[in-house]
Length: 173
Image (cartoon, rainbow, N blue to C red; front, top):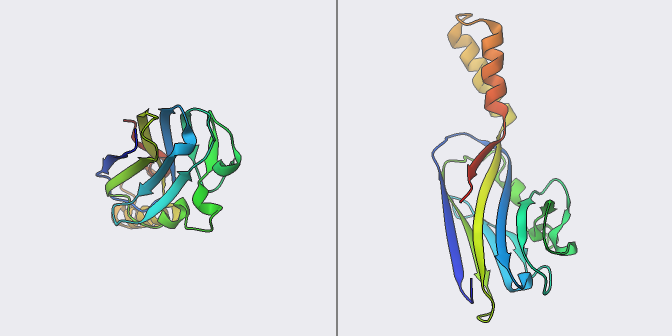
């Protein structure tokens, strides 16, 4: 990633509303403060995941970015392991929660900018960690129940609902 911009894409074919969206990424870089990273949604909305964090230290190791838990990444030190809030929240910008209730389907992009040409790094992989919107899943279950009209035993419907509410992982490139 020497003084350049790298864009990696994940195409999601599943068509449902987002209840919670988080990002996991792994980057090897010898000076993390030279990096800026953004998630760009299929409709073009952009969230700053981090910008100039970590000083002269190294690496993001299966780092999870989540609005709802962890300390803000601007207050942490590399190697970044664990769960951190995006730097957008410190800047009072919209975070990942802005995607709640929006459709997951489409091409999601991770954009990483390197600000210095004398340092390089590798994006090892990234993933979207997504839980479906619970209300939408419940509404689907109610519609399904009316349509099925007791055609399936209750426990099978419950299993389908439980499966629909599980977190899904997209990516890992």
